[in-house]
Image (cartoon, rainbow, N blue to C red):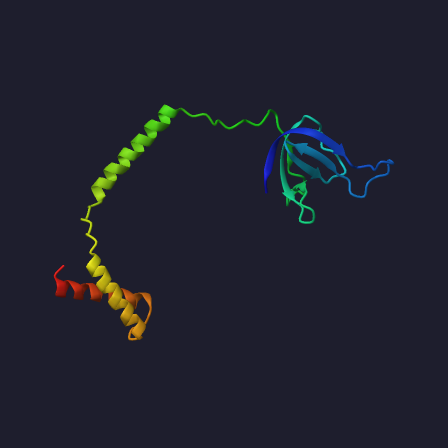
Length: 171
C-alpha cells in the first residue's frame, strides 16, 4: 500500500448533503500534493484540517480507481496521522570529486582482482577454409537424415569435423 506525506491543500466534508440531510456514506475528501484521497468516516479526526501536515496510507478502489484511506486490520482505525513538521526532503546533492575518487578506487581494486584471477588465453585465428569445410559437410550430413538434429548431436558433429579437417589439412 502506498504512503504519502504532506500538507492538505483542501478538505471537503461530505457528511451532510446540500440540503443538510445526513449522507448515507459519510466521508472526507482531501488532497495532498496531486493525490485526492477519501476518508470514509462519520467523525472527523481532530488533526484533519486544511494546511495540516499528515501521513496517510492509502489504497485504490477496484470499482473506480479512487484513492481511499486504508484501515488497520486489527483496530479498524484509519491509517492516517498528524506530522509534527514537514517531511524531510531527501538529500540529492553529491560531491563530484568524491564520487570520482570512489569510482577510480573501485575500478583499480577490480582491475587488481581481475589481473590476479584471470589468465589470458591466446585468441585463435579464424580459419576460413576450416569453417567452409565444417559447415558444408555438417549441412550435407544433417540434410541426409543420418543424424538426429538436436544440440548435442550437432555439437559433436562439428567437433568431429574440425578434428577431421586438422588431421587431413594440418591446421
